[in-house]
Image (cartoon, rainbow, N blue to C red):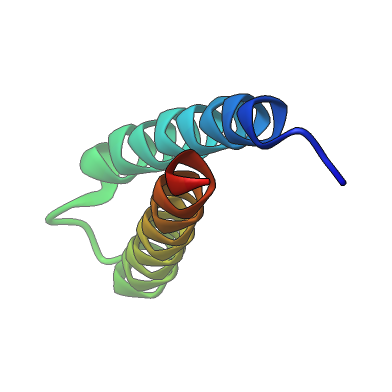
Length: 68
């Protein structure tokens, strides 16, 4: 059986990376706000939302692993 502590630690690293990526996407979107690139803004907001969903799913997995 896999080591739950090591699984939880690895999930933390992945979730943190996803959070950083989400922050980067959000920052990249800001310069386009108010421009005529609504298509790009919408796509980037969707990517940001999906990264948030992934982060939340990983945080749930971490809680499950931590409960043992």
